[in-house]
Image (cartoon, rainbow, N blue to C red; front, side, top):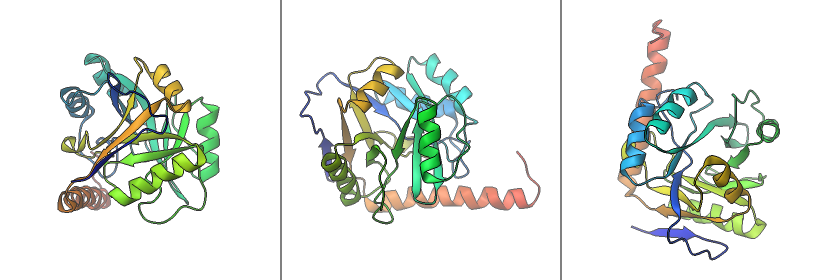
Amino acid sequence: MREFLFNPKGLSVKGFSKFDLHTQSKYSFDCITSPARLAEAALKKGFRGIALTDHDSFNGVKEMRVEARKRGLVFVPGMEVTTEKGHVLCLFIQEKINASEFWDVADEVEGQGGIASFAHPFRKRDPDVFLDCVEAANGRTGFDENKAAAAMAEKKKLAFTAGSDSHWTREIGRAFLLADAEDAEGLRKAILKRNCAAFFKESHPWEVKLMHNASRAVKYSQKALRKLGWRG
């Protein structure tokens, strides 16, 4: 399967640490993975740090922070917010993002000193706008779409992030950011200065489809249970 390393500054990445900046947990509507399992998988796969970016939810951040600390992982609090123009990764934030309009989300993230990254911008359609940061590699997105995102980051000199978009622990490691950072603040600065690189390894199409379908099954199962009055 194909893979690429997006390294616009031509940095020597030997010795750089791996960070997964796009993951989901049971606090997302389409996932059942616990923060503990997520953190343990990241540790076992050699990651230095991880972000939690649940769909439109900040509820798992406190639990994930504890699990990351137990394992010595750098933790980046975040959310993946759904907007009219696509999904926005809200990273390095301190509290829930309440906005839902694309530019309002970006403004709210900036107000918290965080980074707003346009998630998998070419997955379903070509975007008509861009933030100052883009997800250059996403583990659940195709090779060509990721290459297009990386090319846009290069053309416009945008900051960039990368992550697996994992809903299941086996997905961690399919895409990640490489940076010379030992804490969250160092990582944030590395992203803003583009002193990092993004790695993506293509998975077999049937496996990606299977993971997407599994997430959809969780989504619709939980929706049906809520209609029946289940609040667990």
